[in-house]
Amino acid sequence: MATTKASSKDLSNLFHDTLKDIYFAEKKILATLPKMAKAAQSRDLKAAFEKHRGQTEEHVARLEKVFAVIGKKPVGKTCAAIMGITEEGAEIMDEYKGAAALDAGLLAAAQAVEHYEISRYGTLRTWAAELGYNEAVNLLELTLSEEKETDAALTQLAESAVNVAAEAA
Image (cartoon, rainbow, N blue to C red; front, side, top):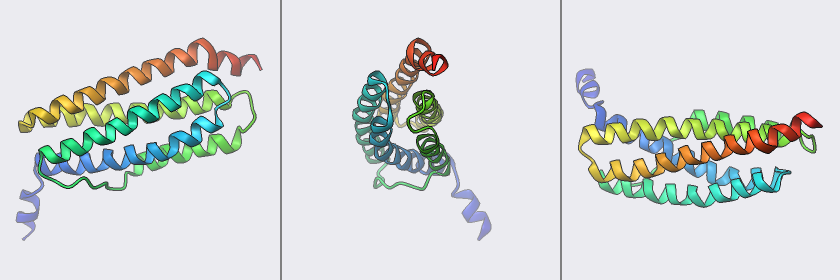
């Protein structure tokens, strides 16, 4: 019986489990971004969070298409990593409310989320290619590219304004 269970744990099962993980993460991020936008003091940072919320809605829709490609129902699986990252973001919002460093902390928390997503989408895209899920590869690549663009935009915002403002205070 243990052999059957172990043999059913192949790459397609791992792909599906990881897909459920990132689906949960994206839904959690959707719920968190409005709170971060509200807390942000910088107009540019608020706008970045609001823009990414719209992108995240598209990411969820793309993930639902990936589930369809593999013939599975879109279901999330609790992602401990994103729960921890978003908890850290909530702590920053509480501990630095009204402080000059708040936006720098929010931006850092957002980049932690982006780096997690980049890791997951890169892995899923690679596995989809290996499993022959060509349509999924394209969907995952598109989201991966957007996550990398968001990360680069956040870095630019941090270096050009947010970190400077936090340091100057």
